[in-house]
Amino acid sequence: MKKVLFILTTVLLFAGAFTMKAQDQSNDYFVGKWDVTMFNLPDGDMTMIMTLTRTDGKLDGFFIPTKGEKKDPIKITSVEESTNNKGEITLYFTAQDYDLNLLLNKVDEDNAKGSLVGMFDVKTKRIKE
Image 1 (cartoon, rainbow, N blue to C red):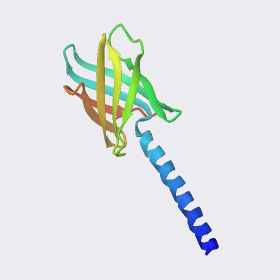
Image 2: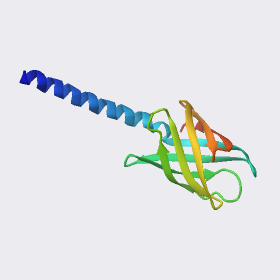
Image 3: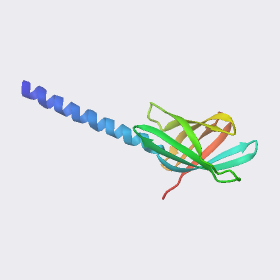
Image 4: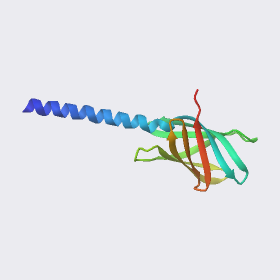
């Protein structure tokens, strides 16, 4: 009986470890570089390059505007990841003295879409290097 219990416990531990590792990998969908287009902003459409990395289990990153004179990085101040594991994140950042949020949802392996402050459509495409 003890031998069966030991084997069962070992199998459950390995299964749990495998499941946690699989969840970590699926949560890395947004890690990498993305071409982000925000449509119909007051100044017209805007494109930026978004770079996201995972450090110590948390997503972090920045945007680089591709148009205009100012091309300083815009730091992402925080990221909320969906707990339902369906490929959804909300990014928070400050641009032109406004606190903004960008909601993104996975469309397929290389595309996501969403909205900026719930008002402006956003489309993203993974940049493959």
